[in-house]
Image (cartoon, rainbow, N blue to C red; front, side):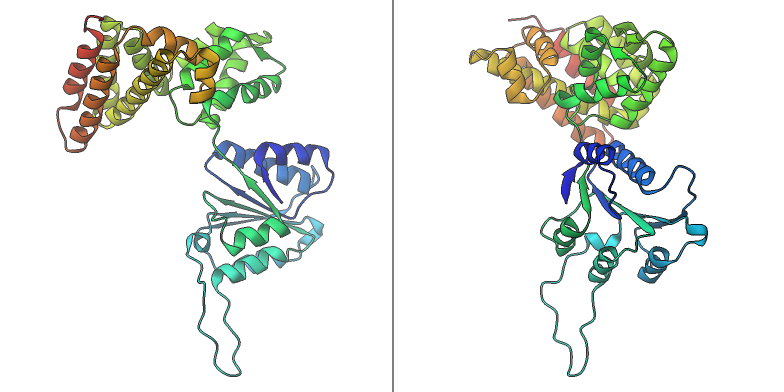
Length: 356
């Protein structure tokens, strides 16, 4: 069975049957963690104490075989976790030399691993996590028939609202519309949304809000403003709004707190922010409206609304020139150039330039 994390989690809630093998693959650690927790809770009774076995990357297949097939004492069962088995990253051999007369072909480690997971006894449950899976590989095709193969793909900013609502509902609360919009604004420049990070911050909001069950924009701002991860957003927002004094202040703070190591992430976020402004500006020039731009760029409509406002502060040429400067700066920083002072020059040229 091939499925996605959200569909699999819903099926576990509704279906009393439980698979004995689950393969969770993809880059989103939040979903991997959620799938593992839900799988284990469904596999074992609340008071059960299964034997726990952990295997990572390189391990002996015989040790794994023993863990899966060991009859547990007191009927507790086996919970076997396998993380990023190295044999899944190895190229599959299409052809093998024929065995000599009277000799059997020797199975590859991947073939042995696949056979192990095809024959898991009823008292064992196996949870295998991997970042990537090759869909052309026989392992993927076989496990799709024999087990639950769950894709844990990253979430994009425009897909975030249902997830935010479910997180708030877990605390019996909900986000006010402007609070939801602020979170969207924070993460809109990111290619993918860091769900584990957001989950931790939402827990802090719930703790701070206490009995209040409608979380406001101020609650979100108070928690997120304390985090170094958000400082890049604040700088990018100041650039988009053409607030030169604020840009220089935040840049100075970043230089003090982040040092030479932190400039790469800052420049990347700034580049993504300006690229989005340029894309929005170009679509606006073609007559596209907010909803059409949101659909084309896969950006939340609220983030598009802000980008449409901010894009009017710049010309296409000024945005392109700044993006070229940022790209060059990335190369210079890798070679130990004068990164922070150069970044200041690039941003002052953009933000301080007269509008035309």
